[in-house]
Picture 1 (cartoon, rainbow, N blue to C red):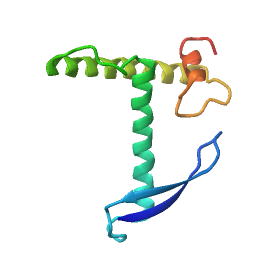
Picture 2 (tube, rainbow, N blue to C red; picture 1 turned 60 degrees about the vertical axis):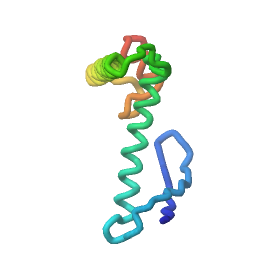
Picture 3 (cartoon, rainbow, N blue to C red; picture 1 turned 180 degrees about the vertical axis):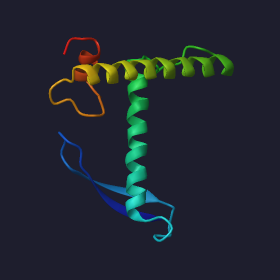
Amino acid sequence: MRLIRLRVAAPGFRTKSVVLVTTLLDPEAYPAEQLRELYGRRWQVELHFQQIKTHLAMDVLRCKSPELIEREVLMHQIAYNLVRSLMQRKRARAPCPAQPPELQGQRSTRCATGRC
């Protein structure tokens, strides 16, 4: 196992120390900085999954058969992408003060619905 210590900084949040544990042992083939970038991308994906589950009520799948579950997941993805697209368009026309570029959280939801 290989341990890589990272400092994670996000605007508006405290800087955190994170230990990334990996089986990618060769530091020349897998530099720590490259793994840090990949970890950051992966974390953004996890945040999007969390938003899909929380805000689109996908925490419980209602369908029973594999085919219908696949459709249900696809419909949630489509709905999520439509909402995010609306949020980005709204931001482009009338940006909210101090709105982060990720457009995440309740503030962006209010902006997307015109209650900025």
